Image 1 (tube, rainbow, N blue to C red):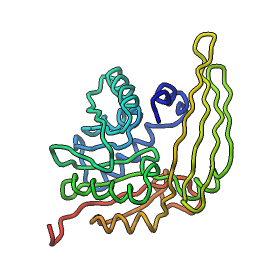
Image 2 (image 1 turned 135 degrees about the vertical axis):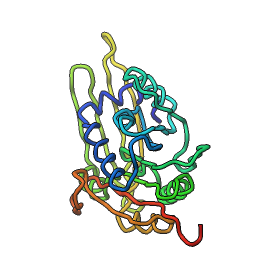
Image 3 (image 1 turned 90 degrees about the horizontal axis):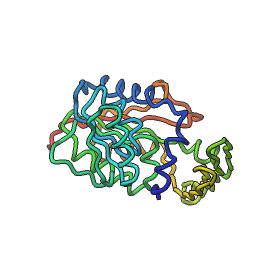
Image 4 (image 1 turned 120 degrees about the vertical axis):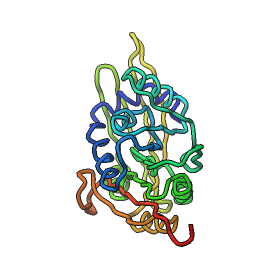
Length: 248
């Protein structure tokens, strides 16, 4: 997964407003006293589309399991004159020599984890954070995965790229299989890229309980506008704080 996909990922995501997305994360962190220059880890950083605008405010390390994605991210950051540390790591087993002020999981990162993996991510993050550190992540909602993606097929046809994107919802396992056939033009030929991914649906009650069990406090949720979310929102953001307690 992701090898050839890294070559076309940015082209497919060209319409996403990453600057506004980074601004929301910045506001969520600033509200919880994470200051300019704080050390943060962005998990599932992909090709660095959020890492770069986040680096305007914080000292960012980007983590991903794909070397191909990280290679693109490194080149992109360098072209923007940014010094960002990109590291191949599994977000379920984060390891840094120093504690961090915040950990983010962006762009559906936690949807790529099943329930057990999600809990491991929370526990790993809790260990990594300083006291008063913050965890924040976004998640595609069960509504989006089941009702919007569902068993639907989407297509795109442009001069230099086209794709067929099929989705298969599994009610028993509460997950979606995403199957993409991508054709990108190189000279007078087309390169075919086949990509399959799985995303798990995590509801708010499960997320909140899992955060509590991992030791986090002051848990809040919002939509992409930073406002109270509704059941029809396709993406929500979760944020919580690691406070010192009587057992630590």
